[in-house]
Image 1 (cartoon, helix red, strand yellow):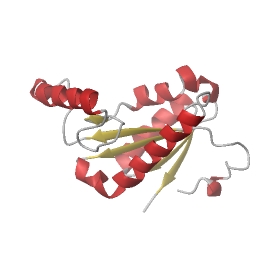
Image 2 (cartoon, rainbow, N blue to C red; image 1 turned 90 degrees about the vertical axis):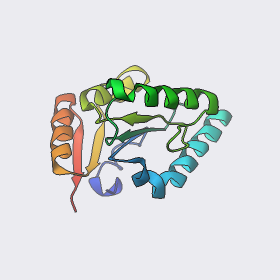
Image 3 (cartoon, rainbow, N blue to C red; image 1 turned 30 degrees about the vertical axis):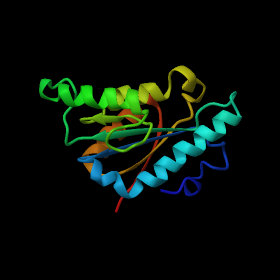
Image 4 (cartoon, rainbow, N blue to C red; image 1 turned 180 degrees about the horizontal axis):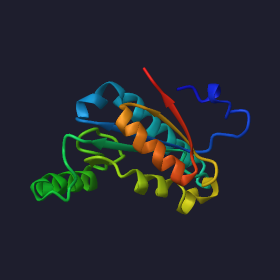
Length: 156
C-alpha cells in the first residue's frame, strides 16, 4: 500500500512506523529479513548520532504456528528463546533485535501500546494499513474503529 496514495502525506509528517507481520512460520520472513535487519541497523546508527530522537520503527513479528507461551508445552521453547536473546542480543529465529512473538496477536493490546507512553502524542493521528486474510482484516478494522484509527486495506 502506498502511503502517498492515501492522501495522508500532504496533511502530516510520518512520525512512527509499527510494522506488524503475522505468519504461520518463520520461513515466511526469510526473504524479508535482510531488509528488516538493515532497517534496525540504520535506526540504531541514527539514534546513536541523535540521542534526543525517538525510535522511528518498531517491528512486531508473530509466528502463529507456535501457540502462545502460556501453553505449558511451549515453556522450554520460550525459555530458550528468551535466554538466547539476552545472551546474543538477537532473536533466535530471525537474528533481529526485535523479539519474535508466538501465537496470534491481541490487537487490543497492540493498538493500546501504539497510543500510550511515548506514543501518546500521536494517539489521535494513527493510520493502519492492512494486507492479509479477510478474517484478520475484520478484527483489525474493528479494533481500529474502537481506537479511532484510520483503516486502509489492500486487497489482492
